[in-house]
Length: 290
Image (cartoon, rainbow, N blue to C red; front, side):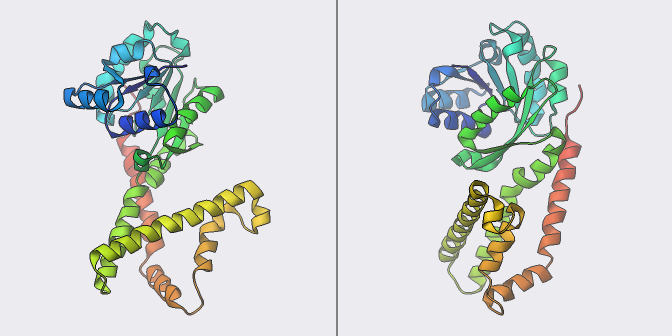
């Protein structure tokens, strides 16, 4: 079984580690590099996994997942590159995976041994509970088989889809930042419920379960559209949210009145502006060269 090295034991690294173990990966095939002693001790005790240095972790790994914060990439890439050049595993067989936001595959390719396959992944916060979605983008030397193998790793923490690297900033703005947009909407709806006379605990339960149930309805609709074909559903996947909204909106009813106010308040424009602003900021933060 291929050995997987996770460089960085923060929330993303731990989420991936936990997901891989849940998916049946053997602990002997996993290794973590974490410099913080307290964090290293926690991971070792909680998951019975070997926690060691970057060099030791990379040395015999088939997959090297760089899961440090973007600002820390420069601090670890030289160690990774030096070890990869002399790794026990033939360097041509090592696949390097980055989940550090804003760091391009070209940056790694310029640092790593020539021809090293690099795959960039943008996961999101719900991966912490196994419900994330990860966008996978191959670098110049990553083959379709490499993408397939990396996708299988992240399948352990949620859904996976493949995009061109040029789309990663947009992915970041939609799914990477999306959970925060969602939490803000939940917060606003809870506050509105309290203003309407509900207690905060009741409003919170109503909103959270409504959001969860609505997401489940949409996921079921999308799954049906995928398995039976959009023609059989009488709609395309892109229009499913609109169709579900129409289903729960009676003409002249309470929901129609509420939706009218959301439209009047510029909800669509605000969301579009938020995504564009997040995409622009992601582009600005990008690390593309040495």
